[in-house]
Image 1: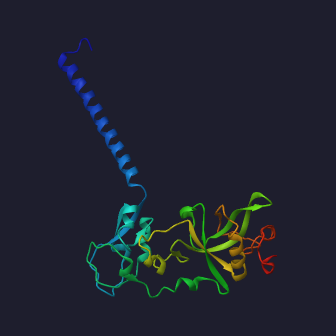
Image 2: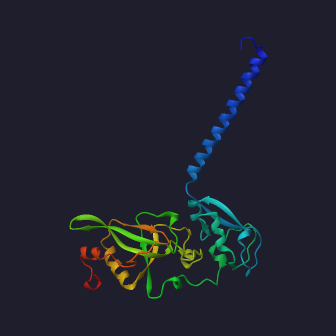
Image 3: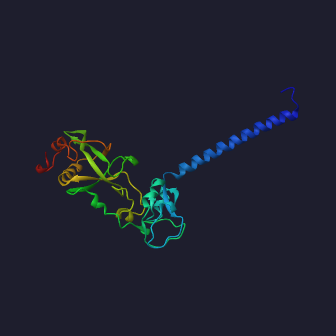
Length: 259
């Protein structure tokens, strides 16, 4: 450097300064992005129609635009169609438009109907009933309608809180507002302002006897319930039967409901 002219030295320092300046800008932009993402929190997706639709025409999923918004913002928009993942827009292909829509409008539940869909209750196995269960811990989007689960709980038995598998191999027929065929359109969704799926609320299929047993058992489950999600190929020998050990351990269950 001692042999270099001042002009060369200045040029080198200028290059270094430019490189440092670029790095500072990149780091700053990255930090700003991180702060914005943290402030935005959980995000969901709304749908907008990309073309005009006349009443009675079929919805084309390819003509739907996905718009990412903050979940808290979506809650204040009324009965809008809300998705957890962008690819869920394909579920709406073929739905009938109830009233004319202009390109750019946000899709509402009241805009669509699918008369070909059977009612969700038709998906329950004959002779069985569907029972809503609230969980202590949310399983997240690993759980889908049609999956098999074990239901677990902790109960005070002889003065000691002990874990039990309450019932094994029961079929999930609903997760939040979604039915077993994952059709996003349902009466429960249409009535909910936010239209969001709560993974802490599931509906399971039980025999009528098991449903009564569960009603008595849940009165003792003050510490909350959890689930284990089973593989689709799982074979459970006593599927759908309430754990007889738990029935014997808990007081207050009718004799006719004991094993």
